Amino acid sequence: MQRAAISVTSNIAEGHGRFGKGDFARHLSIARGSLMELQNLLEIGADVGYFEVEAIQAPLSIADEVGRMIFVLVKKLGSRQMLPRTRT
Image (cartoon, rainbow, N blue to C red; front, side):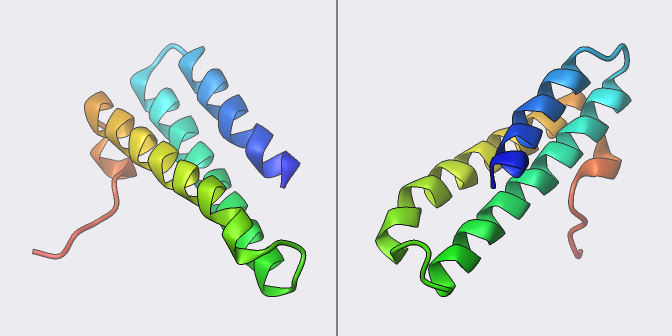
């Protein structure tokens, strides 16, 4: 879980340091994947009894908010290939 959490912020920082918007968007996508990995690990930890379900609610809520912020940033960068596809 520590590795996944550190990967989120590290990929955002690395992408921000790149020269192109595409590189930044790609690193944001990787950060979002690490965030989802962290959420999954929290839920698995609760399922197997490492955590109380109530104890993971706040971290999951924060992770949801961070995920939305990453999504908005990718959208503002104009990188449509990084956005989830929607059916029309």
